[in-house]
Image (tube, rainbow, N blue to C red; front, top):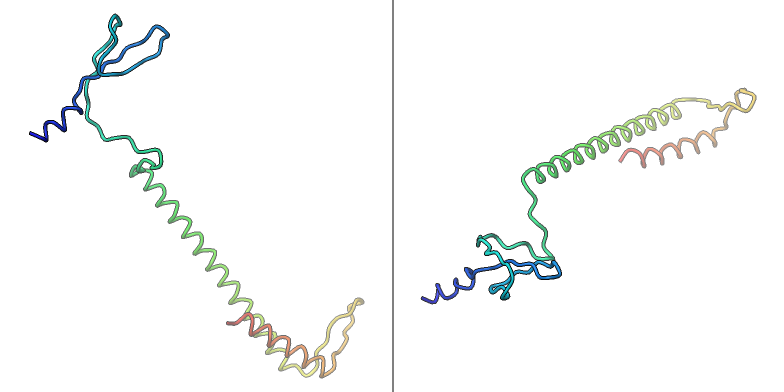
Length: 139
């Protein structure tokens, strides 16, 4: 019995009418002398509140999923490219260090393109510098 009492307000009749200013009104009892129309009652899910957003459809969820997957694949490709570049830099540093250690005499070219031979101290400094570079690039 209490159940029906709670449902009664949900099934109250609703009328729609337009006042003399052209404004549309809704209510349970239309004013006397106005032309009103009885509205059909439909039960529906309540609209989401002002703070809550509507649930996305499966198509929207699918698009979001695909976008996230593409983004992850691109990030993975960038990471692989970076790792490849790091490996290549490491190999170049190892090769340069090996050449410096094997060479008896090293030189550099001056502005005129002529060879300027380096002293043993300069060669050892280059080897130490290359070893530091190798430690940074080959982790």
